[in-house]
Amino acid sequence: MKKRIFVDAHVFDGEFQGTVTYIKEIYNVLIKERPDVVFYFGANNVNNLKNIFGTPDNVKFVKYKFKSSILRLGVELPIILLFNRIDLAHFQYVVPFFKVCKFMTTIHDVLFLDFKTEFSKFYILQRNFFYRNSARLSNYIFTVSNYSKERIEHYFPFTKNKIMVSQNAVNLELFYLGSKQESKKYIAEKYGISKYILYVSRIEPRKKHDLLLKSYLDLKLFEQGISLVFIGKESLKNDFLNEMVEKNLNLEKYFYFESIEQKDLREFLNGAELFVYPSLAEGFGIPPLEAAVLKTPVLCSNKTAMSDFVFFKEDLFDPENKQEFEIKLLEKLKNKPNEDHLDNIFEKIVATYRWEDSANKINKILNNI
Image 1 (cartoon, rainbow, N blue to C red):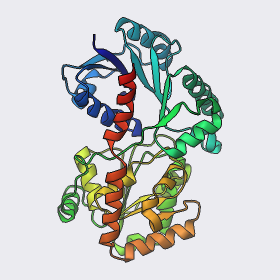
Image 2: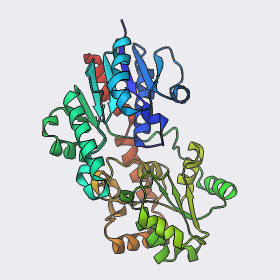
Image 3: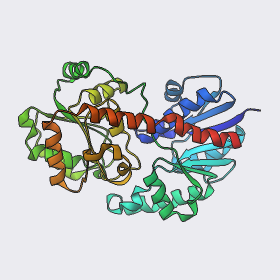
Image 4: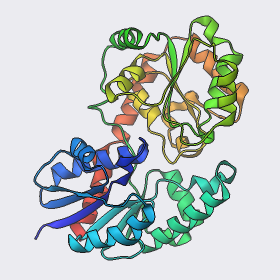
């Protein structure tokens, strides 16, 4: 009998986030490499999953009846796992309340414990309880960066010697090298935007969109013909950001898109004068890597998981130091990119961050079941 692995893919029903990329990329690798394993994917929107994973013989889809996370975790998932005789079930952050097979969970971060002022008390209490309980129930625990591993072990000491890193990476088939002039032309013709600074991320206070917009306004970069583009849905309100936007409604050089097509995202990244990632707290941080493999100049925060990106060197900055950030921002915009520097970053990323390596961590677990 073939081994059976179930993947809780309910995150595909909501807004785009790094967890979606993590599941999509790792399991697209495993589906091809392991025809001897049957992969079950569960979500409310099964058609969406079929578009992402296709319909190969070793893939099955399970449509959830409930949208409530309590009903899904407490009732529906245990029944699904038993009925389909699942050997291993993979979850993101939180596992079902009842253990009916081997559990594997990926806890991407515990930022709510490191940055308590950024989250409500209820959010912290709820997440702390469920993450701790899930870690105890899981046979295998993954996280996406060395930073997250250290912080999880700090708050949940019992995870030591139990937690492994299966880091995020970049899909070079989606973010392939190509003509920057063609990308600039595409963005100019479709969106009417040229010569722009780009930030791709969900909007939350910890993401520090307000730092970038404030510096953009204070330095009057719009007077130099430079636009500012934000791409990403608002997950949590950033009051400082919203106040600035309200006060500058007539600013013609500021653009915000909740979401765009994957093709257009690649064109935006490839055509940008500069990609800036000022986030204060991340469990990993994929977007600056996606920009860098396109050889777009990057300025990246040096906080939390981004401190692992040592290959950015002088392109790292402290998002809590506005003066330092603005000096580096002006310097990057003024000076032509050093091609050798961009090439070196590209080579380091493609050698270090590979979805095949992360998939192989799960592959080894499948071999031992």
